[in-house]
Structures are given as structure tokens and as C-alpha cells.
Length: 240
Image 1 (cartoon, rainbow, N blue to C red):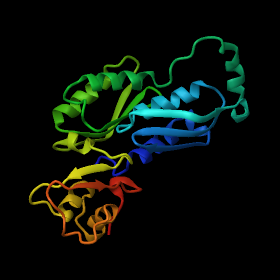
Image 2 (cartoon, rainbow, N blue to C red; image 1 turned 180 degrees about the vertical axis):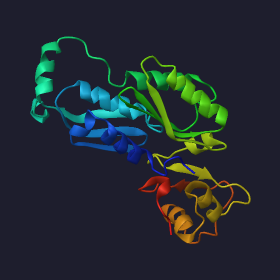
Image 3 (cartoon, rainbow, N blue to C red; image 1 turned 120 degrees about the horizontal axis):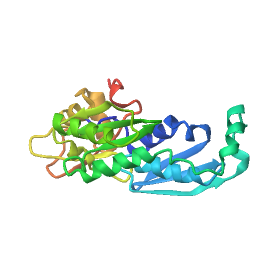
């Protein structure tokens, strides 16, 4: 089952909402052909770079387009007492708010056993959040260890990281960021639904059938590629 049951766009939107800097602004984010496309207004150019870095940490996104994001001081939030005091140090260089996530991303991509696994990398302060799937307990421990080894990382949240056999096969996505599965001999739509959604009910396998324009869910053939659409609520969503 895909680690979140959500497509790439949903996971990107969620990551922006969880980011304490970006969630203050109205930013539209969508994904098309593996490109994160942003629209909205932010008060400074550095926030466009921050959007690009958040997108880089989402598995399935290869590029970002921030040309639709306008930089306007009018979008800045009203300063608090703390930010007013902080203006004294504005001339000093500020730390990249996602520096640790970038370092973790580099380490995980350089590790051959982890490079092709579907893993999202987020950062909350000094905490690194890993979400996705790895093939084994050894890979799970390796991913956590590499993230922990980055200077400044206080802890690693692996509550959303699952161990799933052949996890790298879940990393085949289409332009919408949905998983693509290639039918093998002996496959049934209900068995495929059970693998990805944890449910073999009609509601589960018809979700796949409808996404692929299948009038008869029993008529599938070896070599056929099927889109496995994500659910709105992820793996906890109940499929009738």
C-alpha cells in the first residue's frame, strides 16, 4: 500500500500547510507532469526558494515552477513585538530553514539501497520527518541513522515510514503523481486493491476501475498499466 494513500499533489499541499513559515500565506500548489506549480503572493523572494525546497523533499516531484508567485511586501503579516526586535539583526545572514532536510535528502539519495524508495523528507524546526516506504527493517534503520547523523537534527520522526516488500515498485508514478501498477499473471483487481488500500471490497477495487475507465473490473490483461489513485484521507480512509 502506498505509504500515504495520497498522490503527490496532496502530499505537497499538506507539507506546505505543515510548514510554520509558508502556512501563513495563501499559496496554491498543484503538480502536473512531475512539476510543482505554485501561485500566490509572498512578502520576499526567499520564500519562493523555500517553496522549491519543500517540493524537492516530496517524492515524485522533479522540478518546481514559482513563476506564478508574486513577491509583494503587502502580503507580509503584521509584525509582532518579537519580529520588531528581530529587525535589529536583519542584516545578519539567516540560516536556510530547510538546510537539514536538504542534507538528509542528499544522504538518502546517495545511499544505493534507499535512493529508489518512495520517501518524503520534511523538516519541522530541528526535527526531520520521514514518510514513505522502505524494503526492510535494515533500510528503515539506515534511513533513520542517516537522518540522525546530520548536524543539528535533534530527532527523526519515522511514524509515517513503513516497511513494505519491494517498496521501490511503489515509486512508479504518472504525471498526476498517482502510483502506476503493471498487471502480472494471476492478478485480480481486488487483490491489487488489497495491496494498495488494505481493502478488497467493491468500493476499493472499483476506485481503481473507475480511474482507468474499466467497464468490467474482471477484464484486465497482463502488461496493462493501471493508475492507482490516492485517497483523500490517506491509508486510514475507510473504503466501503
